[in-house]
Image (cartoon, rainbow, N blue to C red):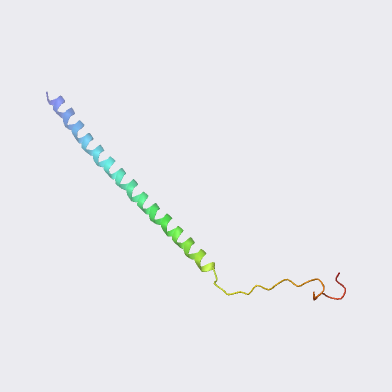
Length: 78
C-alpha cells in the first residue's frame, strides 16, 4: 500500500514538474518569437528609411537633342 502511494505521489510530482517545464518552454518560444518579430520590423524600418534617404528631389529641364548640322562635335569626329 505504501509503495502504491509513493508511486502515485512521484507520478503527480513528475506531472506537475512536466507541466511547468512545458509552460516555461512555451513562454521561451513566445518571447523568442516576439524578439525576432521586433528585430525583423526594425530591419525593415531601417531599410525603408535608408531607401527614402537615397531619393533626392530635384527640378530638371528637358533639353532637346541637337541636329547633325548644328552638332558641336570636335573637328576630327565624324
